[in-house]
Amino acid sequence: MKATTNPLILTHDDYQTLNSYVKQRVITKGFDNTNTALLKAELQKAKLVNNDELPLDVVRLNSRVTVQEGVKDRLIELILVVPEKANIKERRVSVLAPLGTALLGFRQGEKIKWTVPSGKKTFTIVKVSN
Image (cartoon, rainbow, N blue to C red; front, top):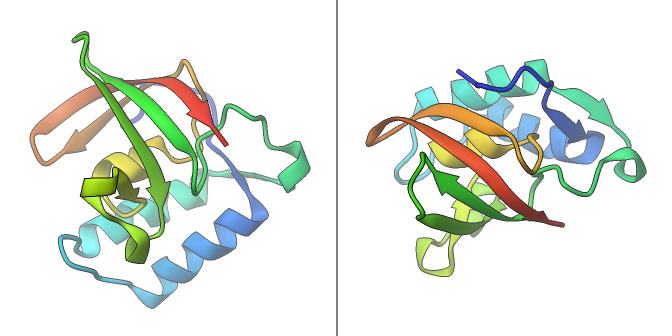
């Protein structure tokens, strides 16, 4: 589903946190087993690194991310969070949301193709702040 061929990168800490959600089959409002299964598949492909080895431009939990949808000038700013901290009004997007799962572990400048509720979209990671 991803346009990039680079492996996604996660810290051991983020992997453990996210894997606990997958194991518990956390289902929150607006999410279902499909979202959990997609996250599980992404975790299985991840390259795990120590916190001090993670490049600063990789999307991880609590990253502030700016993405561009398709070729439009529309930019989306968000913070990637665990499900219970999600709040769309504060632009806090759950890692179990389709866009959250899509961005996890990828770097600034990468293009990602992912299916979201409105259909298959391409997103470019414009900026990552950790």
